[in-house]
Length: 367
Ligand code: 13P
Ligand code: SF4
Image (cartoon, rainbow, N blue to C red):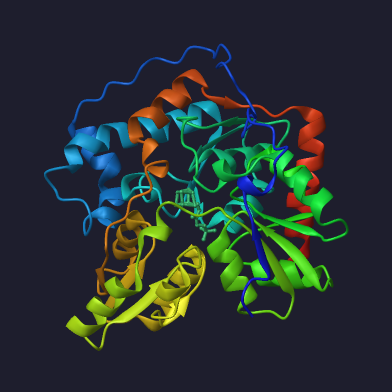
């Protein structure tokens, strides 16, 4: 079924103009000093990082490794000193994903893993809404994001005030928010979802209509998989909305045997050309199981490197769309984050309590 209606900022004459879209980030607390590590390429560093390079050798040329390895080594030492864990999204660069992360995954896996963390400090290698989700689930822990400017076009497309206006316009219709939203938005909705569980979450509400925000394309994909009437919001992912059906047809014309997999944040004409559609974790599992010879991955570019590091026999072709927000996280700022305990993510406790309920409701659905 096509989406039933779509709303956006222009549909509300009384929409407040000036609003925060994310919770404030406090200045870094004063961290007990740790000595600044030496970043020299020594035989000790080479030996200590050899098992890591063995995982990365298909995606990082040998000439580049001596430039990265000292920082990778320093981060792994600092994690022990700080009793910290690093959570990394599938879109992080391979030297982060395979080099320093303790846990990697899609948005749902990272949220679930955040509930199980025992360490004192979580460093979120991803974007700001992911760090906020980790903080919501770990109010007592120190949650850091190496660069708080790592935003998301979806999270920036809607505010808590917009959700209140939607509720006034459509009273009684339950609201599902994609996790790619600020804590302020999560606090106003009934439940969250990720691209892994969006259809399941919508159907769990047992309602004839559901407001699904803010991704218009994920909403369209969900509407195609359910009989629930979907009312959408005019947000889009700036990375996935750039793909086109023509681009995919050109890949297929060049090699009819190629397999194409795509993320549901892509427009419908792109998904119509794909052999499989799923969240980043579902895409990775599909590749692990099918092991296609040649594959086109229609999603953020770094994920192809992370999959190739694990499955070098799969030849991956990619129109390389990078997420500028994900790429704000680097080895250097992860190291700084561990040295200074910055930038710490904080959320107003009353807001956090309401936002946490929406995230926990989604996580509990799994069981
Ligand atoms: P998933 O990893 O949940 O599929 O999300 C993709 C994404 O764009 C996250 O920002
Ligand atoms: Fe947001 Fe798209 Fe970047 Fe994911 S890839 S963080 S949805 S802009």
